[in-house]
Length: 284
Image (cartoon, rainbow, N blue to C red; front, side):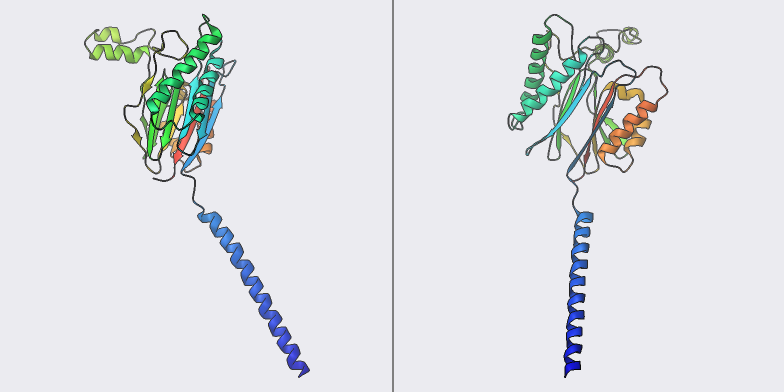
């Protein structure tokens, strides 16, 4: 009887040990599985920048995620002006602050134009007659739709199916001359090889500023898309080089870093400030 009792005790102990072990393994595997199958956030945001060979960084950028929309902004202070860095910072801060005041989704065009004109007013108030200004690109993403604003010559693009698709059009002399030519106002010779083709036709920070270009309709986003906002310094890379980087399967922050690393390693005597925001779309 004593032997039988001892035998039963050992058996019960073994069973309890096995049960505890199985429960422990189950919890571990469940936790591991949850980590593996944990859904990715709908949007991934990465950013990076470099000063290039310039003496100061004139680019500013920011993003903000709210319950109703996601905002991203890149501003490239005009390097020919002494306070371009301040102008770009004022503009980005203004866009973020105006966005945080409430749900802007009821009238996105009004938000964009109001924020841009407010930034312009703040810059002029601070510097008065001193020349100062900045370009701007900004997007708001709501669900599967992207709205955008552009002032100057920075870039908004969509990377889809291995290709970069430009979204905005630069507001510079080159494009203005092209429009003049196609409307029959000037000859082809006048539109080509203009010495000031890169000069801006619009920027935030001058007395005549009336607003920026706003998307006439939202861009429809798809799973796998990457939304790009970047200053013209990133154009040190050609389109193929940029597409090869963005085609890599990596988080948005790694892709942004890779783009700026590639700009830094480009063999150029002069490199502008370069800034990029990459927004990856993980779900429809």
